Image 1 (cartoon, rainbow, N blue to C red):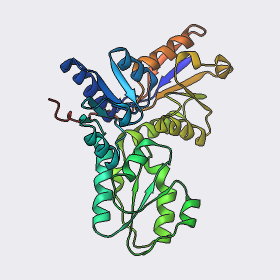
Image 2: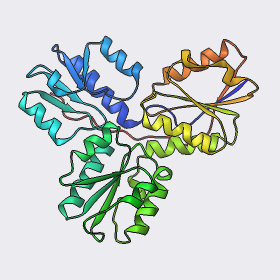
Image 3: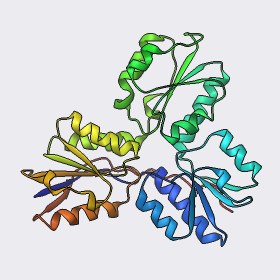
Image 4: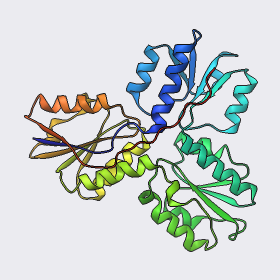
Length: 305
């Protein structure tokens, strides 16, 4: 059986930065390190950090007063930061710089009197954090049907922003519908879309031309991992999301000669290798890596005392 690995796959710069923030704090501080929400959407990463002494919580109210606290890569609302300050928490913000950029875009548009529309998924923490960073009302939409139902106070003063884990392709139809309904709408350039999301989806689209099946290694609550499955299926190739090698159903591989494997932006490479090893227990395998975009993006760590 031939296995083709997507390029790029796995960790993006924002995820690497967030994990490095927590690990640096663990090295420098004897006191417990608390993280609000999963630092990234991957159970292996979270469990590894738990084993090193990190305590993960959903809300800052669960954190003892004065404790060292990290905000996850997804970002948080202004209210969360205010709540942390009220509890005298020592906070370090591991929000991905690309998410912070979306916060800033929304804030600038709002300051100029624009009504904000956000393209994203309501249950995603990044979306919740972003909306909570922007003053005034923010309309959340996810598809073209939502655009049809949208009502704003002034159609000539409307701006849009997007969730970073959506690609240009994910948002294309929605943005076109917005521009058709609101001809004067303003929004970010295509270059502002998350590079990692777009690159990983482009790789799957390219890989789909060469394989009989795509396995996406990632967590079920990872937005970008789920999108990779959707991209494969949209290109006519069946795809399955697997969090661990144990999730692999070998029946999926029946009568498949070439298997493509990729990984979401919060998935460590070790999980990919474990999936390959599991397949090799049942099949003779030949593994190769597809040509693709080489990512050289690096984000500096925030100030850590």
